Image (cartoon, rainbow, N blue to C red; front, side):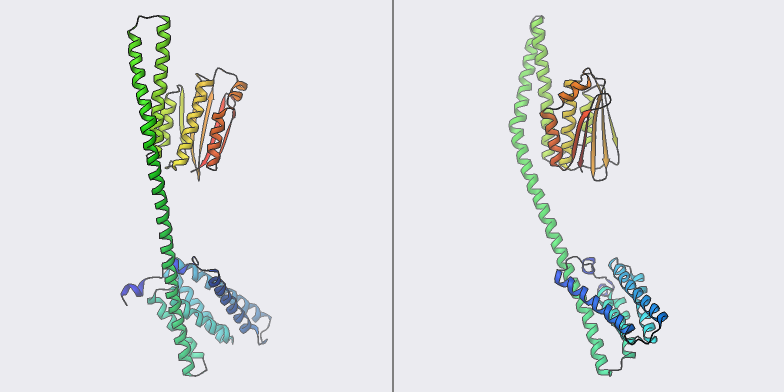
Length: 388
């Protein structure tokens, strides 16, 4: 054996209960209940203890159960000295039980410590602990040296076999987790490939179409500007410039959507500031510890903010816009509020019940979030919460 074999702990997967089948867990609990029953029977079966001795014996059994549970926790956390201290406490408790005349609990504690030390501790610590426990057992055993030798050898073999079995189960658990992680990564890769394909299709059709429209609208604007000034010419020029601006904004939004599909999403805060900059006067505040959002949550925040600001431009032109993004534990919250618009609150409430509001609510619900929209103290308020 190498030095690492003696000094290394069994893996956490091996020491934990994860990966145990139900029959194996049922057998383990049955063994624990049987050993506890034997300890209680061995302590109180002869009936020669008085009330005070019964109380002390019961407290001793409870203390041993607690020490055993604590040993399992500290060994799971790979804490050597606390584990050895608890093991020494259990061995000492066995000596105390033997001196008090409770031989059965003492034997159970010594044998249990011998097996468990080999199973859960590094061999450099488990072997000496097992040797101490078995030496104490051999000193009080009266069945003959052959029986004692066979029993101690069997306990050593049982402890080492349990250790090997736990390590095999831990290795299987690690392989299973690695396989699951590989499948998740494969699924994410396939989803990203599909998104990239869709992004290419959108780029080839919609982005090219919008770019061509921008070129034609710019050419139309230049031609119209060469004509003599007049009311009709000015009206047509205003419409062409507005259409060009809408096409440019649509192209920018299309590029944002393509970036999201490819997983190249810019920070939400930057997007909101850019969006609000076109709706003067406006203000963006960010609260909470900023962190990267999932693609779905990021898109939901962007689309809801875009729709809410579009409604502000349509129904409350000139209103102050306040946008607040807050990072909360496990979710993100967005609030878009306007104030000082030209339309009264009642008309705003009615105008916000169209398909845009319905689409925002459906987008939030698909992600397990909520969306509230309605009149506020000074204008219209949209509140979004989605897991992130």
